Amino acid sequence: MRCLRQLADAGLTTFVSFAPAYPPTGGVTPEGIADAFSEAGVTKMFTRSLDGRWGALEAIETAVRASELREELSRIGDPEHMTAFTRALGDACQARGISFRGSSELRVEEGSAARRS
Image (cartoon, rainbow, N blue to C red; front, top):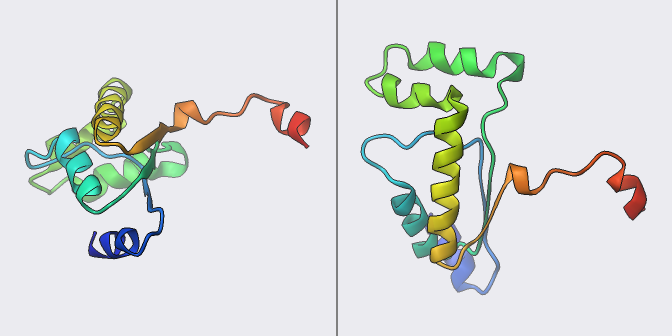
């Protein structure tokens, strides 16, 4: 965060890829995350949910099984929870002047890349 602030203070546009998005833990809120990025001078942000292919979800579940944060982090595989969290994070970022994009906003329709060429 200090590096982002230094880059922003130097006049550079700062961008954060907060991906994959994970459920906030320990009382952290979407507003708190947006505040931290705003205070660091971030002007653009992108996020997406965890891609569950290739065993990523199972690996995370195994890794956090013994963690005190297990219950909170287990929501990473709940699409409804993560959609609501991502929406709240986007709203909080935009309220602070951070341009926000989620993966659903950047999907390219099949064949559209060829039309742009």
